[in-house]
Image: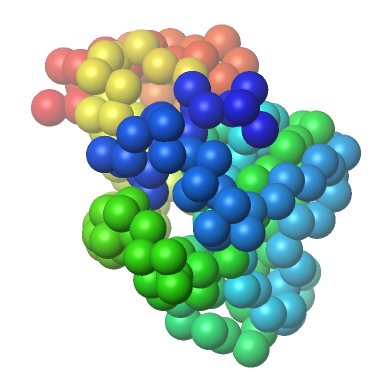
Length: 224
């Protein structure tokens, strides 16, 4: 576990907690790790979740399927990302999404009840941990609102523009790499795959952007 301490420093819920406390913290939280292969299911829709997951290595996706089998990618997860905290906090009997790996993956699991309940030892880091968890849930709520802003756009082009504008803001540059293939981007934006490809080609022909696979360069003047 010590091999991942440098990564844990970047994880939101461990903010302002000294590395020297990690051993005690992880023991107090009953932390455990589990390895997965590509396309393995971490959390299955309609199941109960009581733990928070942290990606230690690899990547995963949070996906949702409707009754017709149409899939929507809700979020992409990479090293250091946290998932499951909202469902564990809400104590849902059945979660509405599935979390599955897109590569080989190592995940750290922490029981949510251990995070928000001060233990009998009154560990000094617990109040910080609780504060960090509340801030994380609040930040993710803001990100969810941003996602809704994208999906509320009427056309495929408008959704792409909103998504790319958000990516430029996130990366601080008009050049960036997205974590999605074309099929996955279509699922994320809730648009038809063919329509997405046509619109990207049209936007490139109009000199709005250029791209190679999942690497994009945006013409800032076209987005003003």
